[in-house]
Amino acid sequence: MQYKHNTRFGLPEAVGAQRDSDFDAYIAVSRAWLSGPFDRTWLANATVRATRANQTGLLGFGGDQSDSHELVAELAGGVFLHRTLAIGAEYRQKPNNLGFADEDDWMTLFVAWFPTKSVSITGAFLDLGDIAGLTSQQGYYLSIQAAF
Image (cartoon, rainbow, N blue to C red):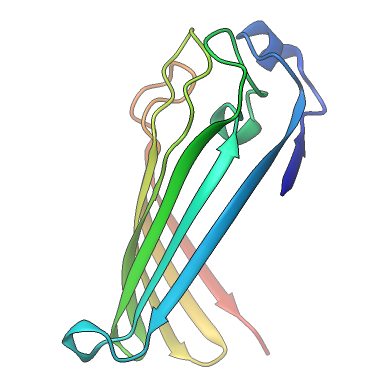
């Protein structure tokens, strides 16, 4: 379960959101194949989420189109091309509760490199579709993490 709350509800309410807080209920299943196809390590995750969040809750919950929890899917998968290099993709469905703008599903492609046990570098391309009337919300992501 996840509980989300907007501390400022003015904008979500103005675009048709019904509530400033709500909960998501979800179940997730993950699987790793250490010697999968092509003799590579593969990872997969599947999630089913009951939600009425608009833009994951940033624009409130429920709306003029629908005010009930909807089941949506979230899928992710990746493969290690080498023991230090992984590639993969993610997909996230989202409900379409607000009449003023359609809500698009989100997609991500990523590459992760682990040069040492304590350092990782991840790059990704994100396609978030249209968000609240702003078209073609796409971009790149870069993360460098080190633990000592």
